[in-house]
Amino acid sequence: MGGGKLKEILEARKSPVSGQVEMIGDLGILDDHELSAVGRSVKAILQSRESPEDTTSVYTNVPHKDSQACEDDPCCIWEYVKRDMYDKFHGESGRCTKHARAAIRLGFHDAGSWAKGDTHGGADGSIILGNELTRKEHDGLQDIGIVVQGWYDKYQAKYNVGMADLIQMGATIATVTCPLGPRIRSFVGRKDSSRAALKGRIPDVNDPAEKLVELFSNKTITPEALVALVGAHTTSQQHFVDESKDGAPQDSTPGVWDVLFYGETASRNSPPRVFKFQSDVVLSKYGETRDSWNTFASARGQAPWNTAFAREYIRLSLLGVNNINDMTECTKVLPMPVTTFTAPDQAAEQQWLQGKDTPDNDAGAALEDGKSLSLIQGVLGVVGDLGNGIGSVVGGIVGGIGGIIGGLLPRTL
Image (spheres, rainbow, N blue to C red):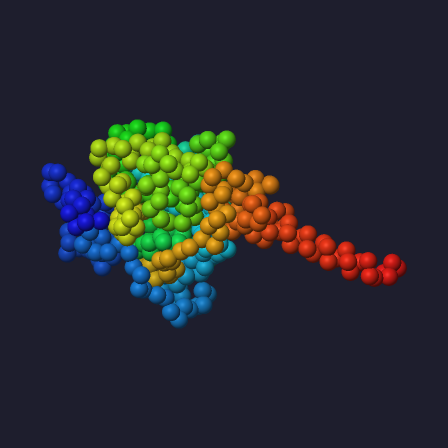
């Protein structure tokens, strides 16, 4: 991204009336001298005066989770939560799994339930605690809801880990677990609520660009910021928009946090299996969002997008939160980012993108599980699956050897 274009995008964040970046929660009413270290940092991040990413902080000499030392450090228990999450989010292929992708979406949907003027909703855990997952707009999040509920049951009563924080830390841990994803600065201390958020706050996949821009503007999110946030679709595979194309990815590298999504959404020559959400297509063409879209789609778009996404996700993750000044930064527990990635099964994945599938039609599901595909004599398979692909070859060899050995053994054995 050129310096001029970046400056334009940052300037667009400012209010046309005051020239100031719109603040959220208690940051909007506190004077600078009243801000804590965290309050000052979050405000500076939102104003683009401080980096929203952190690739240096580490957590060493972690106390045992049941020790007094761990109890005294608000971030300590999150190291143990992170380990549980990483095990769910990281796939054998190096890609992030369906659980990671769903955790990111869950973070969006819990926080995105807030709009200006609302007295409740936002990043408060109500998407689970308030039973909002029964709503159609949350289709596909029920399974990750069960997983997060399990973590809540494990850590809340004994270690005072809240649902709102579990959801938002889950989203940032999932993001950095995806190859090329940013290590977003992450904060804990949100207040939980079981009061269900108001309906009509979540965008629909068929919304026109004008409606999307208006909807997010009412969440303090600018058109440029909206473009950065929808880039999270780069890792996803859809299931409910068109059930006849179940598992179709939104770009040609599902499970990888790259900028191919932007270019392929706008292109007429995307691989046949790539499924484009209409809401993304219209944003790629709309006057207020097109330039930002093309900037992220460029060959040098990865770093600017990561930074923009990190900053805007911090904003999103704090919508409806009115105690930002009292929160604690726990970025140090997050995994380090994977800054380079080459898929171990590129040739097989390309065949799948062109329309091929395994004999069991489960290549898409395997990719969501973080597994690698195989391609043997033109047949797609799943690495480690004895039902097809490489497993069939191995099974045939083993079976042949077994037959030979069996013929040499006495029949009475």
